[in-house]
Length: 189
Image 1 (tube, rainbow, N blue to C red):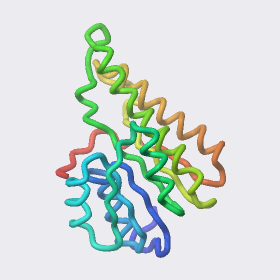
Image 2 (image 1 turned 90 degrees about the vertical axis):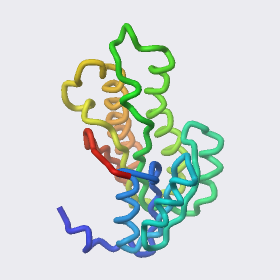
Image 3 (image 1 turned 60 degrees about the vertical axis):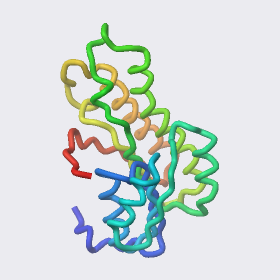
């Protein structure tokens, strides 16, 4: 893997949805350190502002609910060009775990929100993507390995995100589209 400190993102725009904490915040920090103009998006503006305050560089917070397709479309219309898009946003997936017979319809629907939100974001961002840009969608380890008990719906959603990325890689080429499956990540922020 290339040393990230040797990667220049000068004059490039990196949008991170889910940028107020965890993996998204780390992606934003690394992009800013390498010269990118970074737009961090998440639902809660106060969390975004805290994230922005912890990152040196050209970083802008934008509150966004990825489940509201009209707001997503309007928000992305304000961005002239996107070189790289990372979508890491997801609510606490552990609240969506449970045995199939015990899962409520609401738990199932909230699990599907991950794919819905990713769809809204990618659809809105694509017209603004640089032809040699990249999109990263964050899935979960349950998409690739046997899931633990109580993970049936989450595994299905994560597999759908991974397959969505694979299909988009063909559809949107030469834009690079990949999914990452980090599994459980203990993030302090």
